[in-house]
Image (cartoon, rainbow, N blue to C red; front, side, top):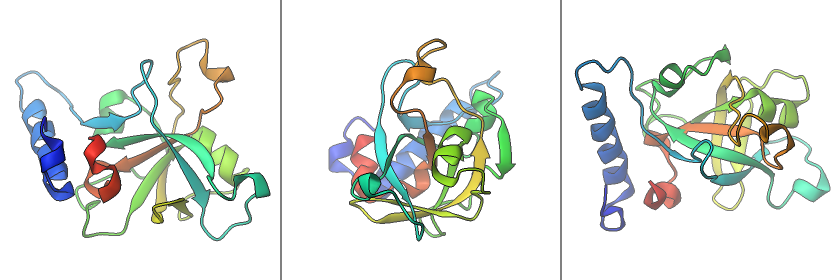
Length: 173
């Protein structure tokens, strides 16, 4: 993956899958998952997201609600011991040949859906018009640290399978 700039988005996705498989095959490893985007405690990658087909406050219409984003493998939540609260996690079928899916954390669910069930709702990433269906809600991870997280400007978290990573974001992997 060191020469990502010379690879197609599909080659990047396949390279990540191969790297994840190699890590999982190491003797003694119980669970492994690739992850890129926001790195807990060290950095942030954010995207604007909008709930598709829903009324959005005027101040959010252009850029959406900002959320930390993580592109992950199917076993990420198990590996990181992040509890699945509703719906499902990712699976091997969540790839470029199937509808785009996303898992959000309980904080983003609260921000966007105010007590309504987010499962089955759709989100759009403004600017690249990438539409994803919410299939799961997970517990919130204190991305910014144990004490700073509650006061961080961006707390909501958005996870999507790296095999469905939008082409425009693939060079970031």
